[in-house]
Length: 138
Image 1 (cartoon, helix red, strand yellow):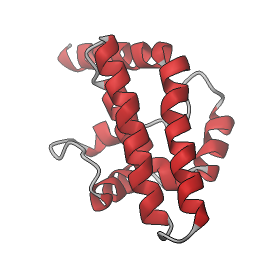
Image 2: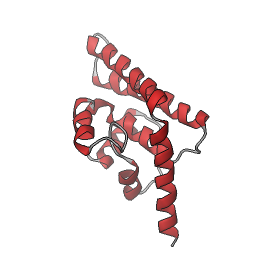
Image 3: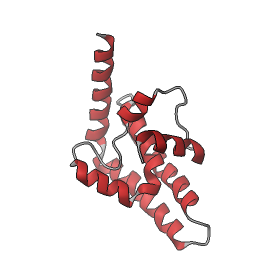
Image 4: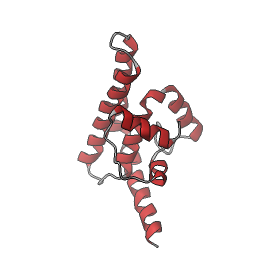
């Protein structure tokens, strides 16, 4: 799925995303599962295995790119990721499918992993957005 498809799926699932956003910005903020410093092939592999979570991941990438740099905002984005992964899991699997509950658990672990290891990626995403805005203003 490309970034626009992931964004539209997030809307369809009821994930809170900004509506006044350009296609270019939808593409710019999205890097898929995992931080930018991971090799592209690793992130593509993670995207493949965790495809059902991509709408939650898009929103998380967008929150990181437009964060305010505070620890509170960082942690809030990670909690939102876990909650949105739950929405994705519930949409993907029926109530009586055990995979639903495994997927919910994995989504919660995504949020916890970001809590523990994601601060550098959060700060980098904010910096990249500032650089992008500076280039646009020149």
